[in-house]
Amino acid sequence: QVQLVELGGGLVQPGGSLRLSCAASGSIFSINGMGWYRQAPGKQRELVAIVRSGGNTNYADSVKGRFTISRDNAKDTVFLQMNSLKPEDTAVYYCNAAIRDWQTKNEAGYWGQGTQVTVSS
Image 1 (tube, helix red, strand yellow):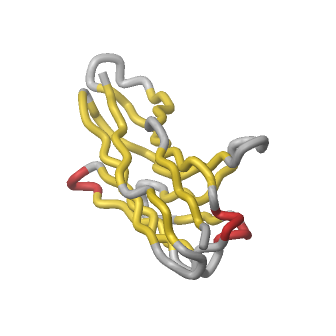
Image 2 (image 1 turned 90 degrees about the vertical axis):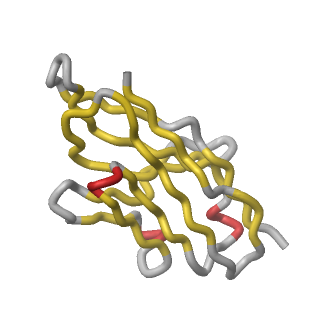
């Protein structure tokens, strides 16, 4: 079994910062891409940022220059540093990872439980 556990959501004022983390655990053989998605009320889930095993990153246009994704491969953990937060960043943020497990060696996508980020004064 593989689990993703997210930490770091909360309430922050506009212009503030938050740092999310997501740790993968369990029967992990290897991890390819790790990323963050978000879903606001009444909207579809959207990609925020992704970092591949080689370190290449991609960001949604709406967060470029404000958010930074990084990963610690030794700890199977991905981070999302969010600066200059805006009310429109309010959403539930989900971690996603493409993981091969030891038993099957098949790659599958796994999701965290989600963490609420609210940007409001």
